[in-house]
Image (cartoon, rainbow, N blue to C red; front, side, top):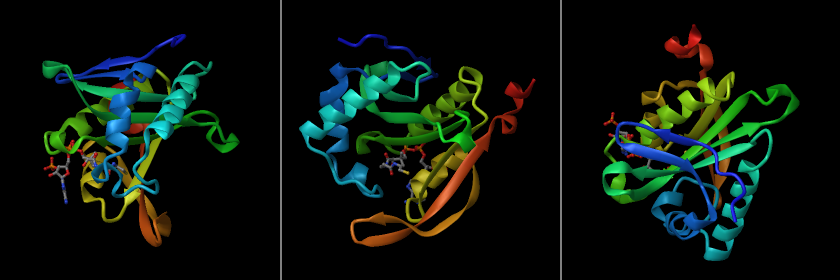
Length: 190
Ligand SMILES: CC(C)(COP(=O)(O)OP(=O)(O)OC[C@H]1O[C@@H](n2cnc3c(N)ncnc32)[C@H](O)[C@@H]1OP(=O)(O)O)[C@@H](O)C(=O)NCCC(=O)NCCS
């Protein structure tokens, strides 16, 4: 049984809550879709891998301090799971546990409605207001224009390009690095 399930975030249209073992089947469905793995370094996964993934996520969410939050994103009106948005906190000495890294993926049927942006913005707000992080980073391969747009709409700035820094299958891709600082978000500055 899950020991401690912590974070819940609510937005106008969405409910985000940290993943539990009960979500494994839906997470498997999402992560086994070729469309949702198109610009990722990993292949669509099988059920055994989904089980391992969710076990790791739940374990991380039980740590003190929590090293990663993997939010399952629901459409409130339909009580429907539409995707995932994860926030992992880097504990490299240079990051001092104060830099988060976000990633996300959604079922194709939900694309184009602003849900990824709405969820990401709320996770960024959570990272700054609840976790007092200093910075949140993310990125995508150059070809992933939809993801770049989600980051830009959520307030991230393009910080650079890791040229040919991301291997998908046999092909190297440019990786666009994005970041947002707590001080970039005005209301939280006070
Ligand atoms: C990337 C992804 C999360 C976007 O989800 P979404 O819910 O459609 O995102 P939103 O609706 O909030 O915003 C998408 C934006 O990208 C734009 N867009 C979509 N496809 C695009 C394309 N091919 N080229 C340029 N812009 C594109 C949309 O028009 C929209 O911008 P707008 O509001 O200015 O019109 C979704 O496509 C996905 O899950 N993809 C697979 C997984 C993935 O790539 N994850 C990111 C890994 S870095």
